[in-house]
Length: 279
Image (cartoon, rainbow, N blue to C red; front, side):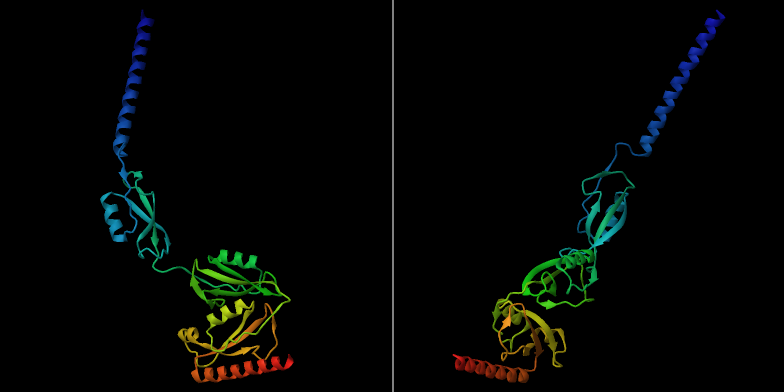
């Protein structure tokens, strides 16, 4: 009887211990649920296009934190506004969660223009990619230096090594291909702007040589408006091989241009006269 009573007492104690343990677990789980707001969540708003003041107001009301992790220049967005967020809009998060933002930079990041001429096209493309610039139009012209970059331009203007330009800018490349044995006439470039001269030379399979500006050219606007008053080779020379280059001198001096055009007309008449005598 005594052993039976002892066994019964032990069994009761074990059952009581199990009940107490379960009770404590339930109490603990209840308080954990309360503390962590189990089942409660917030829907992340869409912060796109908002300024920092607007973002802070919404975050404060929703008991959320924030951190700016990156800035990115986007031309169509207002500087200082949100252009990216994580978690994304519509996500469900708990109070106290940190929202990470990408903000539109106030100005584009700039990089130094590398030297791309006198290297292969493949090397030039790798360099552009490494510094954050893009390859624009690739124009092939006849040249004795096949696959060699002959000019680096942005739009119609040459861009020098070391110039500061916006990251992501497209750089146009002029690349050489096998020089043709065919010849072409020397164009009359006197009185033309650089853009007009480039179009004329391209049509004749010729390439741009050195550009020299006189003392009358003092500003960027002057550079764009300046015209050619001298070229080498000039119209007195013989026909050129396709792929040859022409050096050009520029001015905005109207008197110099007038005299240069008169001289060019004289040279053309002399060339025509010689050709007729040779017939």
